[in-house]
Length: 132
Image (tube, rainbow, N blue to C red; front, side):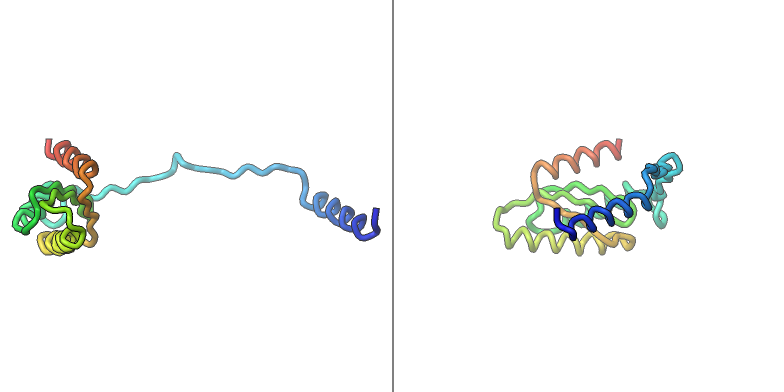
């Protein structure tokens, strides 16, 4: 064994000795976790009323056959059924939908917009459950 490697093992042993062998548990107080839920009312409208106003505005846009809207706080989740598959046209429709949602509700700060059929169906189901 070389002299340098012996010194390395000696230093490693001293470091382990100084660090101690005691295991210290990290405390996790998930029981004290508090979730914040937005009020159902923002301004003078409920989330459902705000979603309906956005949906009405979306119905006025060209290229949109149907829409589903769910509002949560300052975010609108929007599913669009469009009449085309041209990607540039769909991008234009999505930009117009973003603008329309923010114009329809002054409290909307962000939108999440999809034209994926399966995700639109999930948003439609969520919309039905909230209305029901």
